[in-house]
Length: 126
Image (cartoon, rainbow, N blue to C red; front, side, top):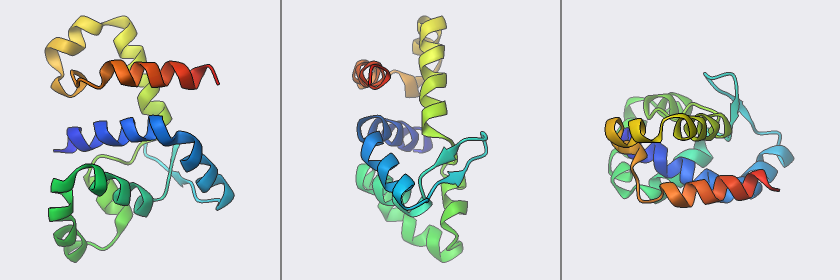
């Protein structure tokens, strides 16, 4: 489930980056990540991923009873990364070895890969 959530978050970020970035900059609400980047606040990410992955909403209440620190939940879900850095890594991997990704990593064989690529290319042209 973690890979599915990560993929959905990255898809959402790629499509909605402009407004999320504006929101975070206007509110000075960026958080440092374990990859030395920055990410939006945990509450925003959790709201988005629970809307995108309905199965997660079934577990989130339990997670919050166990640990109400939303940043810890972001880490446990594998979402404590800079989405721009992660998208760049994925793009670099696709450029250097697309066949290897298709064979070894099911999370990168999403039907949304072409869509992601189009979004990344359009964002790079802005």
